[in-house]
Length: 435
Image (tube, rainbow, N blue to C red; front, side):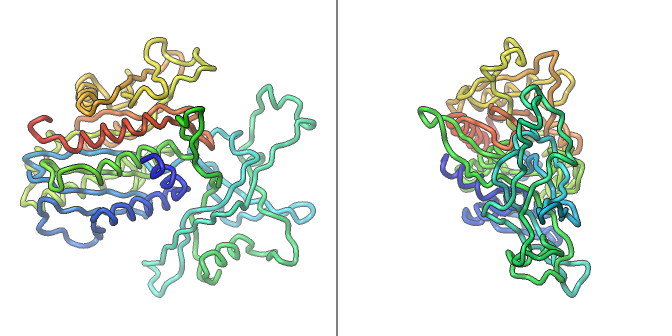
C-alpha cells in the first residue's frame, strides 16, 4: 500500500500526470473512460466509468443498486495540484558567459526557500497543431532527468540570510537550465528541448502548460521507516487514498453510488472549469440521474441523501513550534485522520458531519483527531465549502497530518495513510441503512 503511494507520487510531478496516473489505475480496475460530449444512456447498477476535464481533473463513478434519488451517493473529493512554478512563454533569459535561466511564474503558495539548490526538471502538457484549429492535440511531458536548479546566493554576499530574507518571485526564483555552446540552440532552446523529448517538430508546438518539479524520489525515513518524505503529499496522498478505497471497496455492486472527484486548481482558488467551483461535477451527477429516469426532484433528493468527504491534508503538531498550535486541538503524526473545524466556515465540517466521519473511523477501527487553528494564527481553506456552494450536500473537511505543508518536500506518516484508506473504504462500503 505504501509502495503504491510512493510510486504514484513519483509518477505525478504535476496535475496532468497525476490525472493520467489515476486514469490508468481506474482502467486497470475495470473502469471505462466516458466522453463528456457523448450522450449518457441506460446506466446500470455496477457500471464503473470516469470522466476527465481539461486533462487535469477526473471524476469516477461506481453505480449502486439504488438510483441516486433513492440512495443518494457517497463522495470523496481531493485535489491534484500543488504549489510550484509555471514556465512563462518566451522563457529563455540569457546572461553572462552564455548562462541561460528560465522565466517563471509562481503557482499557488510555495515556501519559496525550499526550492533552492534542488535538482529540478519539467513536466506538464504540450499542445500541438492539427488540421482542425478547434481540436489541437495534447501530449503529456515528463522529463525525468535533472535539468535545472535555482542556486542560492552564497552567505558571503548575504550575511543576513539566516536572519530571514525577503525573496523576489521575479528575481530570486529563476532556475538555471544550462550554458549555451555549440550543442545548444541559441533560439527556441526550450522548444527544441520539448520537441526532442516528444519527437515532434517545434513548428507544430502551439503552446504549453509546463511546471518545475523536484526530481528527488519519494521515500520513507525515520528510525522505524514511519515517515513519508515527498513533494506534493498535499494533496496527492489524499488522491491516492481515495482512489485506493474506490478500487478496493466491496461489493462489486454497492448499495449506494460511489463517487471520487479529483479537482484541479485548489491552490489558486478553485474557480476554474476544472476546479471545485465549477458546475461540471453537478452536471455529471444530473446526467446520471437522468440516465436512471430521474428528474429534478430525484436529483434534489440525491443531494439531500448524499455525504461528501473533502480530503485535504492537515497540519501536524510540530515539536519545534508548539506556540503556533491550538493548545487543545493539535493533531500528531500517527494519530489518525484529522477533522478540520473553523468558526469562519472556511471548512465544511460541523458537529453533524464530524460525527458522521468519526463514526466511520470507529467502524473502520482507526483513530480520529481534530484540528482547529490557534486563534491568533490565520488558517487556510479547502474544497469543502467551495464545492458545497454548487452541490449543497452534507460534508466534512478532513485530511492526514503532515509537516511543512507547501514546502518543496513535505512529510507524512505511514500509519496515517493506512488509517485513511481503511476509513475511506469503510465509508464507501456502508449500506444506505447505516447512512
